[in-house]
Amino acid sequence: QVQLVESGGGLVQPGGSLRLSCAASGFTRNYYAIGWFRQAPGKEREGVSCISRNAGSTYYADSVKGRFTISRDNAKNTVYLQMNSLKPEDTALYYCAARPTFCSRGYDNYDYWGQGTQVTVSS
Image (cartoon, rainbow, N blue to C red):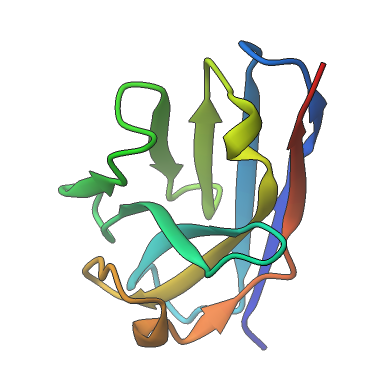
């Protein structure tokens, strides 16, 4: 049974940092790329970042470039999203999702989703 579990969300002041984790289990092998998406109340789901199966390629939304860094530890089946210089507009429910091998910017192209972790940036 495939499962993705996000953790690391919370309340942080503007300018602060958080590290999100996405722990994957149930995959028969490390075939998957992991994307991070977020959705704020009343807004559409937005692609934030993605890392390919072997970490050979990554992408970032323009809104987070230079502030967020995605990485993965395949030995631990975990993908991380380091978020620095957080802004109030980063407030959202953050999801990780998996698809085979390569990243895609379209959330419809992901096969498995976690339940999400809330990130709130506020003073």
